[in-house]
Image 1 (cartoon, each protein chain N blue to C red):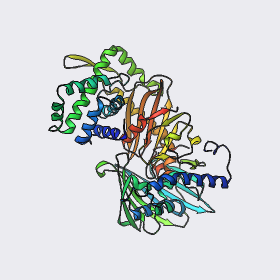
Image 2 (cartoon, rainbow over the protein chains, first blue to last red):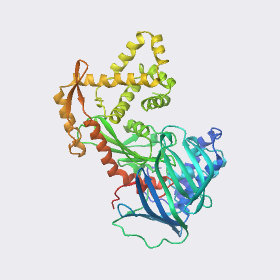
Image 3 (tube, each protein chain N blue to C red):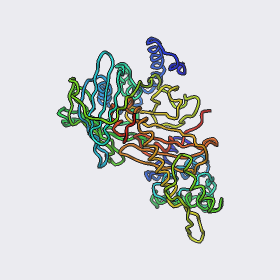
Image 4 (cartoon, each protein chain N blue to C red):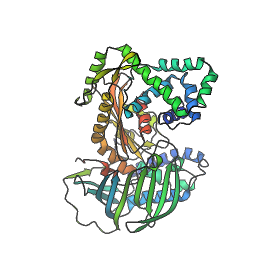
Length: 326
Length: 197
C-alpha cells in the first residue's frame, strides 16, 4: 500500500486510515517498551511535545542569531497561521541576502521528526520515544528575547548523536535558544532569538538577492525502518531511533534522510562512471558534517556522502552499511 | 559482527575505548573477517585525520592483521593478556593499528609498481568532476630498511576536498529535510552557505 500512496491522490479519509493503521502497527512494539525507560523524565517529554507543536502552530516573528565558531549570522524568521495552514520564511540579514519561503503548509501535517517528539497520549501509555536514546534534565532558564525560559539539558545515551542545551518559552513552549554540544560539552553551534513577537505580522522585510520557495513537501505518511526499503539502494545500519523522513517512493532518488526527532542526517549515493581510489574525507561547518567515501559497491564505483548534524562515527558507520537492495 | 562489537570498534578508533572493549575487540578480531574488514575501513578515516597515508582498501590486509595478532597470541596467551593489563589501552590499540597501516603499505608496494600507484592517485578523483589541482603524487619514502610507496596527504586531501564540495552541493537538500524534521523550524537553511533558487 505504501508504494501506491504518492502515485494516486488519496482522499483525506484514506490517508487518515493509513495513518491509523501505521499508528496501530507502531504502537504494538511500544507497548512492550512500556517499562523499559524508568529513567525517562515525563516533564521533559511534555516540554518537547509542546515545543514541537508550538513551532508549527504558533504565529511569531523575530530576529535570530546563529553562531558557529567565530562566524555569526543574523536572520529574520516569521511564522504565520491562517485558515488551517501555515506560512513561514527565513531572511538572511548577513552574508548572502537570501530568503526561504514555505507557504501553505497544512496545520495538521506532522512530519516524522515532530511525530517522534509529539508523544501525547502515547506518553501516558508509557512510551519513551526520544527518552530511549537521550537523557533529559529540566531546570529554570534565564530570560531570552524578553521571555522567561525553561532549560532542558539533553544528553545522548550513545555515541551516535550530539547533546543539546535547549531553552523554551515557559508560556508557549517555543524553542528560544539551542546549543549543540559535541564531546566534552564543546559548543558546535548556538542559535537564539534576539527579539521575538507573537501574533502581529512581520514588519517590512530586507533586500534579498535570492528567494528560494520550498514548493510542496514530501508526504510524512510512513516512518519506515531501513530494512523496508525496496529498489535501488538501502542503508542497512542506523543508530537506534533514527527513521526515514519520507515515504518510500519519494526516496527513489539518490538521497535518504533520517531523523531521531532532534537530529537529522542525509545519505547521498552517486554512481561513478569509473573506478575511484578508495578513501574517505570529512568537512565540517559548525555542527554540520560532510563525510564522503569512495568505494566499489557490488562492482559499481560509487561515492557515498553523509551530510548532517551528527558525529563522524555515525556518518562513518552509516556509510559503511550502504548496499544495493537485494 | 554484533552491534556491541561495532560500538567497541568505533570507540576504539575514537580513542574512547576502555580496556574491556579493547579486550573484546582483540579477542574477536582473529575469528571475525567482517570485524577485520570494518576495522580496516574505519582506519582510513583516521589516516585522513592524521594526514597519514591512506592504506589501499582494495587490498585485503586482514590476513596480515590476523597473522600479527596470532603471532602475538601464539607467543603465549598469558603474555598477551599480561601485556594488556599494565599497558594503557590506547598504546595497545595504537600498536595494533600501526600493524594494520604498515601492513597495508607493504602490501601496496608488493601489489603494483610505484608508477601505477601514481597514476591511480592522479586520475582517481576525476570521475567525480574534480580537477586534480592538489598535486596528488606518490613519493617514495623509506620505512626502516624497506622502501615503501607512501601517498603523501594527496588522497586524504582530495577526499576532504570532495567532502567539502559535496557539502556545498547537497547542504540545501539536507536543510529542506532538517527544517521539516528537527525542532528549529527554518533554521537549518541558515546553515547553508549559498542558497540557490
